[in-house]
Image 1 (tube, rainbow, N blue to C red):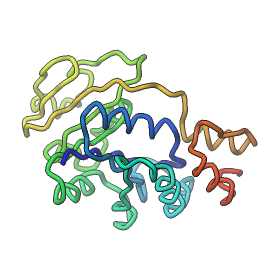
Image 2 (cartoon, rainbow, N blue to C red):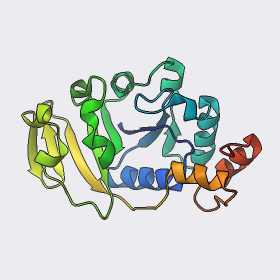
Image 3 (cartoon, helix red, strand yellow):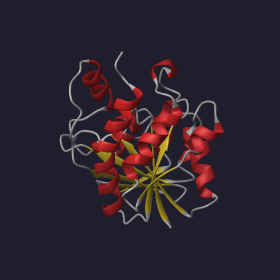
Image 4 (tube, one colour):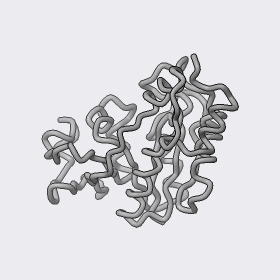
Length: 211
């Protein structure tokens, strides 16, 4: 099975997340895309993150009507800091063909990730570009420590020495972010049409993001 892995804090999950997951799934003919909420993201302040059980509940409610989108609580069950290499290796035991989905801004910083070189040995990558982003070359995308392991196939496809592929894929840009949503709620503004109704209901019932 061709499986997409889409990690993040998802605090909260919103329409932008769902839209790009659907576009990537369709473009790469993935059988399923797993949303994987992080327990403790290595690069974020844990004190500012909503309780993991609530984030998990919001994601489950958002994807329940789409048979191609699922949720994995693997990083929540593992506790501690969430490292992508651990998650990828766990999924590799169950599925043969993995596609790690992430944005270009995060990919530019991948050399700050724990054991980042090893990740490329275990999964393909789909790096999402916004319409305004130019298609970067290998010299722009990959850290120096990886460049000798990367072969350019064309402007949007690169191959790692392991045989795994790195794809640059343009996706629809929706001017939505979890940070902006939290700020809107704090200011008493509506989140209608930017988060699913089910998520909006949970946010309201739990009194999230008001302070």
